[in-house]
Length: 80
Image (cartoon, rainbow, N blue to C red):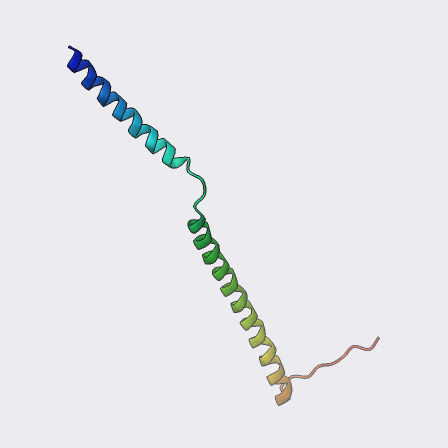
């Protein structure tokens, strides 16, 4: 009976320890490498969007000055 009790106790102890390890893994602190990768990805995405916006504005300005230079449009300043 002593051997059966120790085997049962040992099995329960292993299950408790395994459960504790799983619960403990979810409570770990933030991963520095993971945060750096996420920050880098977000920074590159935001930078890419900003550059696309900048290029679009540049294209509009260039098109405006090209039309102005060819004489297809003119600018009239309002008198005050």
